[in-house]
Length: 216
Image (cartoon, rainbow, N blue to C red; front, side, top):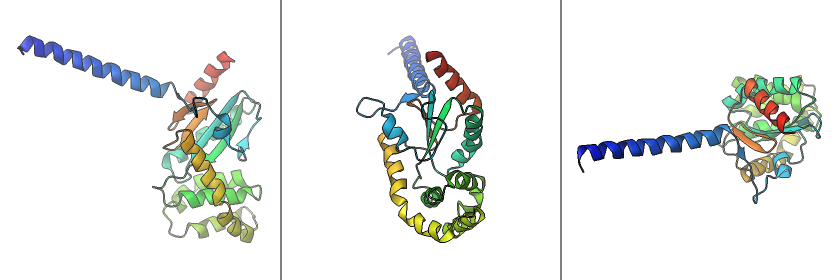
């Protein structure tokens, strides 16, 4: 192969690689359909929607699969909270658990939130877990820390302790549903069935909502 031929082959390979990379990035940025059996399954995405804010009939349904110990979820937490506060008439938000095995206290934190929910304090515990993430994330006695939070929230602490053991099935169901719709990292958001892994900035959420508004 002469020098000129090598040169043009090199250019051709480089061009192909650039095109492939561009298609990959475009696919990620435009969102990915969560499909189950070829059809986006909103029922699997939302589950029983027991931890939800907003009108179920709102035009925008946002489902978040998250891990309380995940640093990226901690970053996303105030962004999501602000979007919900500013778009209450447009957004129905559902929070679901997806505790990663790499986070030693992620699952038990989900159990703490679920147990608090049985006493109508899910969102209060949800906020505490994120705001005090650094306090409990590497603790060797997370149950004791969470029991302290339960006391701060004026929960029945004994019931809370008992319920933490009993709610594991609910946490596992969220995780199983996450696997069914292709979740593999946290946070992962689904906006009207479109999958967006990773942290979205407020401007990105707003842009997506605006784009969806035009299609309604």
